[in-house]
Image 1 (cartoon, helix red, strand yellow):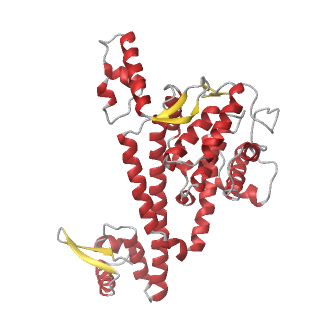
Image 2 (cartoon, rainbow, N blue to C red):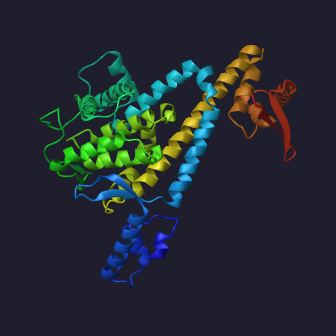
Image 3 (cartoon, rainbow, N blue to C red):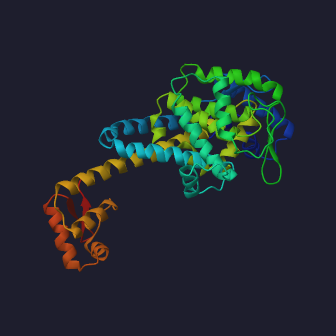
Length: 400
């Protein structure tokens, strides 16, 4: 038992069973597994949220989770160091925010099966079409929902807001025959893959009470790290599944709302949903893994932290590029470079490891001698730096 409790890997039941070997009987293993769960629960963080059986959710603070939180903190610091880009490139930042909202909305629809293309959505929005395909309408509604959230970030979450947001999301974008639009579902709902039911949501009689708990938890302040709490919010909402349709899109929108309300501004410059879409099957797997683990949602939180790291890394890369492009524009506007020199500078900016004379000659479609002369001129101007690598001259762009 202790080999699993002390392992840096947080094994689920089937993984523990596999590693436990075939020599132990199923009965013996069930006893060991019950001890593992009890130990994890006793040492874990108890949440003020419970499943349909009345059992409280909990999570364990694992080594993987701690390492993820350290990485997230480092990325936040790097993002803060690049915050000057906000003031210097306001126009580009506004454009980026709009692109992120669009891509987040597109990805959230695609997770649910939408095959909408960016051009189709833009055309429909430009002409204010009302006879859009289901796929296109899903994206448009997601954009409206995101903007509605941005307009209400100063307000606490409540049932009325959730229902309004749900109505925005599903308007003309559902194939379900929904009987009511002003309260939670009043019947069973289930999720299917292409061949079978993969999840049956909690009994509708539980929904009202569980959603009240969820809203209290969403609004409550406390010591729980925001990133971990965002993962809990995402998991619990999707597990309750309070509506007949639109739960995935709404749950992801509420996760964005929580992050924005709690100072995770980097979500404006990279979107969590696109990262999630790229790991769609793993996402569903981790949801089910935690649903089948007797209240232990550690598995999903670990996965959610990994998503946040990828999102923050992308946000940092994006901001660095905007900052660098702005510096290049200033460089070109304050100096009189020839057309060839501009090509070389842009070429060097794409290869931080450096460019050689032969590569430059091919890129600018000039002789090697011309490339060598132009590269050396840029060295004299302190735009490029020359070094020797395996008896070849290597040119890198100086810090701008």
